[in-house]
Image 1 (cartoon, rainbow, N blue to C red):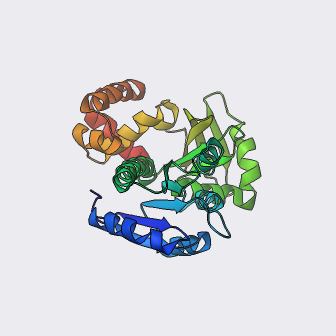
Image 2: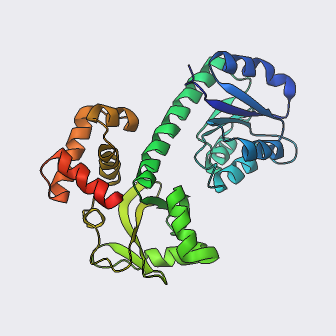
Image 3: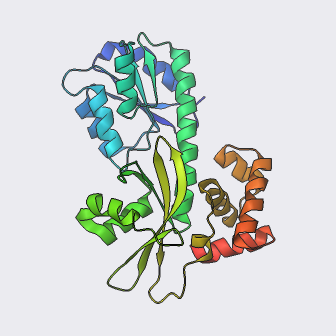
Length: 292
């Protein structure tokens, strides 16, 4: 069953094919929005951001593949999981669906129970990823994921604000060059006119040739980079610490991040060692002080 309030946008140019699917989705707990074209889907997204999108691959005018590419290029929509519905089951179209940003596909005529199962999994996974990434923003930091050419593949809201402030309209060209200017401590720095410094630290690879960077801002006149910025925490360790700083228990963190409490505890052991602290309270206090 869908979680309360989950919204799914169904996009298909054949209205008569939507009725039964919409009824089953609603019976499973989803709020269903319907669009009959790619343009109509984009217009819906300007009004409300759904938890998932079921998208017909072949439609008159803008195809589902092109619609998906536009959705993934929009920062406010890029996190939404897109599942293609298609009568095209050959490899070429399947690959095009994934390349355009889809996370899955189902072949028409759709089997409703299969759609419900796949949808529930992707909604749950997308929510977990979003919570983990937004946790860093809430703590006063931002996350930037770049591809092999240094271009932004994903950026959290805080990271987007800082990059716009520091680089303006030239960020698409200048940010990749900036990220190559790594100092001996593994940190990139860019000073603003008011004396503040934007810091970027590479956290590691996240798959498909992409790398994750943690962004933070050093106040004007700060004597040194924060302990967190030089601790070389992994992305997972940073996520765990961020939730611990918010008062979450190991069991809470395990549920949010989709891991066992034992794994959370193992990450915390590494965090303590890297931060030079001995207790959970000390790590949480340090994170709260430096993350704000």
